[in-house]
Each structure stands twice: as C-alpha cells, then as structure tokens.
Length: 542
Image (cartoon, rainbow, N blue to C red):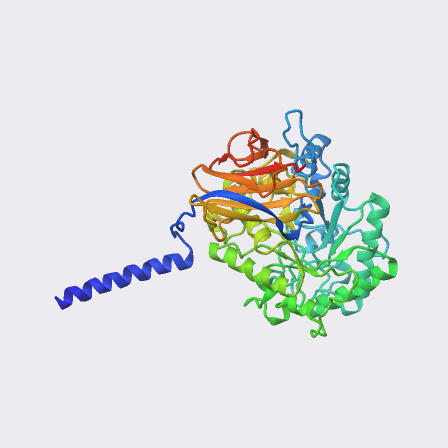
C-alpha cells in the first residue's frame, strides 16, 4: 500500500513539474482561459500618449530601387506613402507619416575594401575625402525623399550607422579588427562629426527641399553584434561617448539655428533602457537614468535644447515568451512614466528568436507574420506607451522577413524583376493609414457577457486585442486584432451619443482584403470580426 502511494505521489509530482515547466518557458502552453469579451467601450476621457508617427526606412534597398523605372518606384511609393483612396474607397497605400533616411558612411565607395561583402548593405557618403560635399550621392535614396514628399509625408528622420569612414579609428564603417566596444571615431573628430551631421541637414534642405526633423546619431550602440564587425555599417558606443557626442551636436545645431531633434539611443533591446543587459554591461545600460537624471553628471543630456525628453529603442529580442512581451513593456512604460519621458519604437523585423512563426528566414506575405507583428505593435502602444512605431526596412531584397514589400533583384543591382506587397504592409496600414500625427490614445474598457468589466480585457494575446485613438480632427479610430482561428463577435461602443456608424477596414488572408472597406456597422450592434484578421473601425464625431 505504501509503495503504491509513493508511486502515485511520484507520478503526480512529475506531471505537475512538467506542466509548470511547459507554462514557464512559454512553449506549447495552452491558451489561458477565455475572457469571453462581449463588449468594448471606448473611454474618450481616459487619455494616454500622443501619437507622433508610423514609419519605415529606406535602409539599404532604396539606394538601388530608387534608380529603377517609374512604374515600379511609383507603385512602391504609393503603397508606402499614399493617403488617397480609389473610386471604391479602397486605400491606395498605408500612409506612412515619417520616412527614415540612412545617412551613409562611405562603405560603398570603398567597395570590397570595406570588408562588407554584400553591396546592398554598403552605403555612399555625401562627404568626399577632400572635405567637400557631393550632393548627387545617394541618388536612389534622394529620389524616395521626393516620392514621399509628393505624397504628403511631412516628417523625416536621418539615421546614422557609422561616422564617415575617413574619421573612424580603423578606417572602416564597421568595428572590424577593433578590440573592445568603444565608439569607432577618432578622438579628435567629434567636432567634425557634428559638423558633418549639420551639413547634411542643411544640404538636404537646400538641395532636396526636405528637412530632417530628427537625427539619430547612433544605431544600436549597445548591440553586441556591433562589437565584432558585422556585415553592415555600425559602431558600438558607451553611454559616456553617446552623451559627449550629443552635447557637441547640440552645440553645433544651436550655433547654426538648426531645429532638428537629436534622438537617443536606438537601443537594440528594451532592457538597456531601464536596466542592465547581461551581454552589454553597465556602461551601456540604465539609459533612462543615465541620460535624464541630473545627478548622472557625466552622461546627463536632459538640459540640451535639441534633445527631447524621450528615448528611442528597437523592439527586438523582447517578444517571446508572451509573458515577456507584456511584462517588459510594462516595466519600460512604468520607468518612463516615473521620469516623465516619452518613447518611440524605431525598428523591428523578424529575428531567429521569433520561433512562433518560424524565425526570420523565408519569405512570408501572409497573415502569419502580419498578425505576429500586429500583436507587438499593440503591446508597444498600449503597455510601453510608444508615441511612434517604426518598421525596419520598407523593401526586402530577398527571402528574409525584414521588408513590408518584396522584390527579387537581378545581378546588376539596377532593376528588379517584380515588386510584391504583403499582408504585413497592409496590417501596419491598419494603424498608420488612420491614426494620424497628433492623435491621442484613449482607454478601452472590456466587458464579458455578464456585463462585468474584465481587467486587461482589451488584450487577449490569443484572441482579441483592442486599442483606440482620437485624431486631431475629432475622428475616432479603433484597431482590433483577432489572433484566433475562429470568428469573434463583440459590441463596440463609445460613451457619447453624437456619433455615426463605425466604418470598418479589414485586412486578412482573403484575396483583396488589404484595408478593404466593409459594410458600416451601427453603434452598439454586434460586430463579427473574421478569424486571423485585423480591422480598423473609423467613426466621425459630430
């Protein structure tokens, strides 16, 4: 009898341990109990962050794609920037409200000597070895500045992966051959680097009629990949070096009367913003405190006129398991709120740790990737209170999942054989096309079928995720993600009487469902959202 009892207890212990391990690691765990949400109510008096923009970059691709024929480039530009509708009311594009422009370091001119093997990941530099400028450089990228401008884009950001190669410590745009993880800039070239950035801002305004409203002088300076010499331009830097550079750039901008804002730090991982990442160490961590707490004397930049009270970071490596997707952003949001700082999410693509959808390899134009990214967007906006959300590069030139649009370039690098959109493009459009700069995120209350309010009911990571916004023109925007494999129904309401019907725009795997207008639904009536879809509901307030 005792032996049988011991055997039962051992089996029970093993079963319990296995179940706990499965849930803790977030692999194969069953979805949590359904929240049975029957009603969402938009709360116009509960106001959160102001939305500044949605964006993507010209990174690598546009230097060549911008040289392609008008038909292809105009199609790409329409998909990315257009806010127009066709005769049926179908949006022509996703209306990105900011465009990220890569200010190159000169690895393209070095060719093979740059030690960057892939020509697509090298870049030209406006600065010449003799100290003069050639404003005909970066021709393809400059063309897309104009295509964006023609379609109404008003915000532009210049991001820098490396200082010009003439001034780096190893003469390269990567960290190749350098020991340690310090800024790859000669000690006597900080002032020159600041003048270069100011010159580019003024040069693009003079020659292109485009103002770079924002400058990011560093890109993932805390990313350990930067320390060993990657396959692209990039440099590490410590918090002390970042602060020093920001002060010198700020001084140069003030001297010239340049209003462009200097954004820090484009961190590779949110942990570096509010804590210490185990792979990067304390000299690159605790960035909120380092840069914006006055008692951090050596790194404080909160008193600089051109440095806004905000940090910018990349959404990589923090998206799995799903418990981290929420908890890390809550921790970031709480830390930012404590220090009264804003936040932009400024880069993301699919990486190897995104195992739920198979990692970054292999082209995927379906809702599998689109929904996965939509869930991240939702968490960045709702829990980290991001005021901007920006994808990495706009066009992928191969089969890796880092683009909104795909093309297959030929060997000459001069023209592509095709351009294809993706469901990810249009899903980002469920946000970018309708939530315009100046919009305010509103609260959303969720109720079950018993009319009881459900805490965090606006976020079911396996089913419905809902967020709401009010544009400066008074229009209301509600974005609902249905991550589940079944249709869901709910009522959508607003605590106001003077409203019109909700106009839905739907993106799903169904052919043609790319922000496709649906039949309007009346306030308070039951809505059915298809499985595996994202729908934006628009309401004009009188």
